Length: 195
Image 1 (cartoon, rainbow, N blue to C red):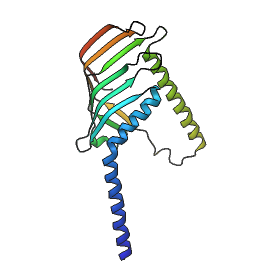
Image 2 (image 1 turned 180 degrees about the vertical axis):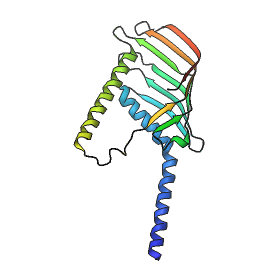
Image 3 (image 1 turned 135 degrees about the vertical axis):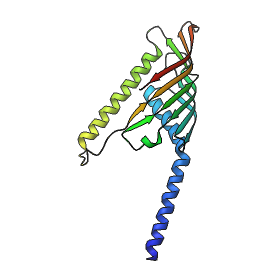
Image 4 (image 1 turned 120 degrees about the horizontal axis):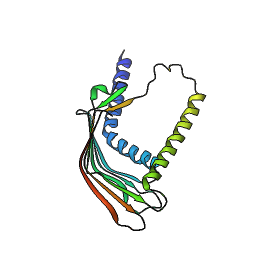
């Protein structure tokens, strides 16, 4: 009986330690995931300064996201945002639809650049579509080769964003050879609902 109690206490200690480790490293995990997969998708450098999660409040705060321009364009960042705050309905985390009441994006800057043949966002679109096609092809091949017993029990998560607010958006457009913005527009507030 003592051995069973000892094993049970040891198991609880290990699970407690793993849980503590997971929540202590969650911010770094999210940051690394964004940088790694953002870079793979766009085929350019993606930078994230920091991520801070507050599970008890259901908040994620991302400080400074930067996406470099693709090759063949200026060495400026194509996209930069100072702060992104995401509110998550904690009660929906274990459901099929995760509810996000608010995404707040502060001070984003977009540089739309034309290099004489195409725009930087055309290249991003192509790279992301290519990445998604490759991921879909490899995952469908895995699905074909694996036989799963519980297909009905597995479901994918979807996200429902109630409100997206973009505050103080700055859009710049330029031609690479000129290296001067020919359009510089500031938009104070954009609100999109039910995404």
